[in-house]
Image (cartoon, rainbow, N blue to C red; front, top):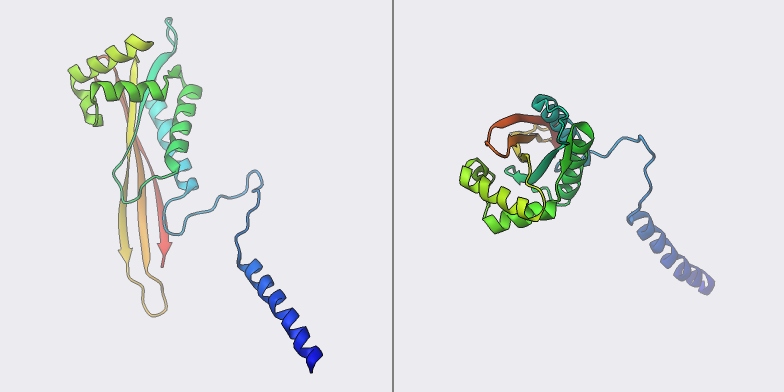
Length: 209
C-alpha cells in the first residue's frame, strides 16, 4: 500500500506536467508556399496582402506613368487612414513597406523617405489627407520637402474601411458575420492637385460564432 501511494505521488506531478505541456503554446516555421492562416475574429495577413496587391496593381496601371528624361517620379507616400471597425495594429508597418516596394518595382518611381514626409507634414500642420487638395497647403509641404532634399512630383495616400453584415443562427447553426474590407488609394499630381489615379481593392471574410 505504501509503495502504491509513493508511485501515485510520483506519477501525479508527471501527468500534470504532461497535460500542461500539451496545452501550452507551440510554434513552427511555415514552408514556402504553405497556405496562410485566416483570422477567425478579425482580418489577418492574407487579407491585407491581397488588398495591397489588388489596389496597388490597379493604381499603377491606371496612372499610366511612363519613364521621362529627367528621371523617375519622386513619390511621397503619406500613409493610410483607418476608417473601419478594425484597427490595423501591427499590420500597418508591413502594409507601408509593401506599398512602397510595389511602387518602386512597378513603374518609374522612387519613394521618398517616410521620416522626411512625416517631418514635413508636422511642420506644415497637415493633419488630414483632404488638406492636400488646398493649394497653399501643398505648396507649403513641397517647400519644406524641397528645402531638405527634392520636392515630390506625386503624392499617394489611402484609407481602409469595413462594412459588416450579421445574421443570427438557429438551433443547429451558428451566428454569422460577413465583413467587407476595402483599401482605397489615390495618386495625385503634387503641383496641381489633379487626381492621376483612384482605385480600391476589396476582400470579404465570413466569421462564425
